Amino acid sequence: WEAFRKLAHRMVDDTLEHLATLRAQPAWQPMPAGVRTSLEEEPLPMEGQGAEAAYQSFLENVRPYPNGNLHPRFFGWVQGNGTPLGMMADMLGAAMNPHMAGFNQAPALVEERVVGWLAELMGFPSTSSGLMMLGGTMANILGLAVARNARAGFDVRQQGLYGGQSRLTLYTSTETHGWCMKGAELLGLGRESVRKVPVGRDFRIDVAALREALKADRRAGLTPFCVVGNAGTVNTGATDDLQALAALCREEGLWLHVDGAFGAFARLSEKL
Ligand SMILES: Cc1ncc(COP(=O)(O)O)c(C=O)c1O
Image (cartoon, rainbow, N blue to C red):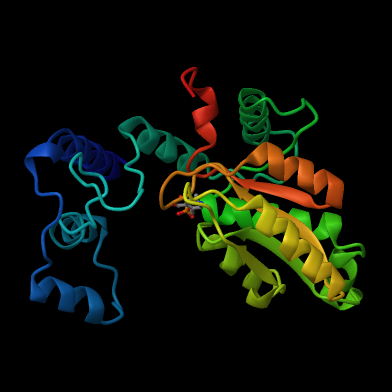
């Protein structure tokens, strides 16, 4: 333990120093050819090299060459940069390595309480439930699975999509993040089941065009089950007219899923 404790303290100190001095470092630098080759081609090690050597290799070959998203002057895409306290919280969580499947234990209750707080912050009913997921893509895909199971009109969990008579279709704007297509693939719906509805000049979904698409699909014998709205699109931050989408979904008996990965927290601002 003593040797490990020393190494672990060094890792924490080095990392905090690295984070504290990020601004003085380049946001990004090209990987030297030798580093790239060693990362791409390092043979399977048949002997353990030890934690010290592995850490040294991380310091030399990995940490200096990120895509840059931690840096205060990195403006590419909408990638998060994390926080030092978040890093330490991850460590504390990893040190417990909790198994979250119920039982009489604290970590599962923490997840439940945090989900409850988030629901309260968003103004959802107290009966709301949820799960902490790894990111926006996984959270949205899980939400789409819930929509599919709730509105398919047959027991998808039992029968799979074989239980249906016609194609289940979902509707979203052309501005929706790529998770939606991935979700349609993963959930067995297929990309052809996603109707990409045009947007207006404000990049918000054209609700009249959505209405028309629904009508046309119903006439063609398809089964619309879900509309995916955006609370902040990845490209421009546009928020669809969620009230209009909610009203339309109520009228049509459809599930409304809202992707709030980028913009949901705007609800917490008094200015918006
Ligand atoms: C609106 C929106 N939805 C979904 C995602 C996907 O989130 P993640 O990259 O965490 O999987 C993003 C990511 O930028 C996003 O902006």
